[in-house]
Image (cartoon, rainbow, N blue to C red; front, top):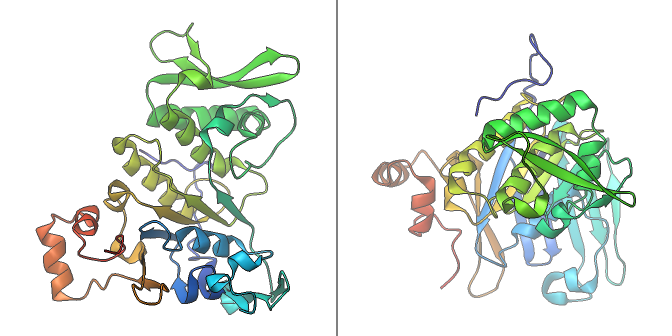
Length: 326
């Protein structure tokens, strides 16, 4: 995918690095005592119930906790989530026994967005309303697209059709009684249009992910749960390239930090080793452990070469961790 700047010729992307540098978790769900550092693009990999979703929520800022969110559901456990931001400012969330918690903000907050798309919600018709930000589950998808200026709708449709070339255009379809939905124009017959229930899951997901860069106001960090779900394997590289372009400020008004949680070896094949965080549970205590890849070791270089530089292949072999415990 050739990623072009939305700001036009002469645009110089900012290269400030990640807005979120690290998080220290204490007693939050299965994150008993965990510190995790972030890159502009960070990919969380691990089996089910290894804390990936909890890390995503921490990255976006926790607002309150219930006793079920405390370590081992212990009502006396104090939950602390300390986010270190660019410039070493901090946001600290604390929930002592019997209290839902509060956030102590130092210096500045961060505009974040958690994305857990629901395909049924993405396909749902919307009652016409202005919407400048996609809901976490995608329920206002049609409204968010229609609320864009026409120029941005055209840019978004062109970018989408370059990735999914079975279509020529994307537009709105009014379906009566104040409802509308999206429609997709066939590439080979301009008189043929498809409604969301007639297109693939991947079609809906790709358009939704591309839409993220057109929201107003633009967020500074987006956390995405299982972005590979429903996508054809050949689209994964295109999607990762787009996410990386987001982090570099090559699309949209400014760089956006991206955190992904995935089970996909296909996505890992397009990720740099330094961007991976491997999550697993200690078999004795149940505590989450977070590991990174040390690219300087001879063992790593040999394994990487043996797997033909396939990070996904090494992960599936069990050679780098982040796989379900046995």
